[in-house]
Structure formats: structure tokens, C-alpha cells
Length: 174
Image 1 (spheres, rainbow, N blue to C red):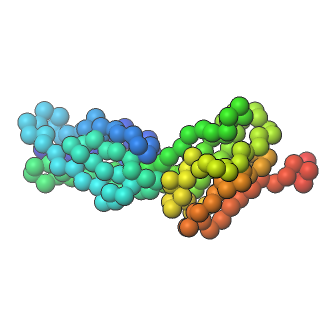
Image 2: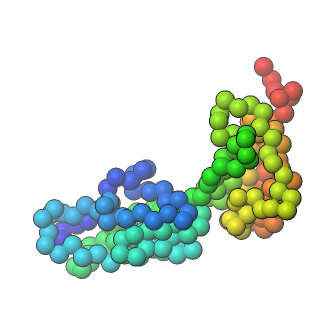
Image 3: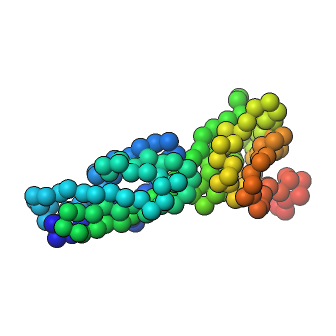
């Protein structure tokens, strides 16, 4: 093998990996020459708290950034960046979507962008869907259309440093 590289990245050589999902990265490796006979690879990640790898299959563990390295038997390497993120929907009949990105931002917005008045449910006697990720959350951004923040929605987030709320409708400039 003369060289190897990652192809098909979502942003250059960066790939999004959802928490809890596994993606086979063997499909993103390109060998030169293409007809090389020994395509044996050794895989590693530099941040196993964000992602793990086994035989080229990468699993998102928790929001964060990791570097994935593939190495041939003759020492050629390819490196890409893994952006591990989590998210989903909640809130019953007026769904909101949430995402914790690789930089620790919890983003909460209406699942349907045309909805302009969606109150967030309270979390009394239950945990918010992102509760298990609370130690990764550094900031919270609630978008326009979300009209209230549920009780205990962002409790026990030890690394939380900022919360951004939408401006109330009555205070907006035309």
C-alpha cells in the first residue's frame, strides 16, 4: 500500500457519529493503489470516552470529539475527526427536539419549525431525555418558538456555564 485516506466525510474528513450508534468506517477507506493485496488495518481512537472502535466499526459513546486513525501493516496512516452527538424528541403532542453536540451545547427547539408557541413539559418525578449526558452539557440554547423551560429541565449539569433564551415576543423589534 502506497497510501490510504478517508473519503466521503460529511465535512472534509469529519464524520458525525450519533451516541449509541455504530458505523463501519471500512467503507470510508480508500487505498492506493486500489488493487493493493494487503489491506489489513489497525484502528484506534484518541478519546475513548467519546467513541470506541473495533475492526473499523465506530460506536458513539458520549458527546465529544475524537480522532480516528487507520494504520496499514506497512505503517501508512489515515486520520479523521469524529463528531459525536446525541439527540431526539420529547414533549408529547407538541414535540420539541433536543441535541447535545460535540462541543457540549444542548439545543432545544420546536420539532416543527412552523410551531411558534410550544411550552416545554416539566420534569417533576422524571428525568429530561438528556439527563444522562448532563456532565457533558456546557451551554444551553433554547430557540424561538419554545415558550417556557420545564421545571428541572437542566438540573444537575455540573459544567453548565451559560443558558441562552429567546427574547419574549412582546420585546422583539419589528
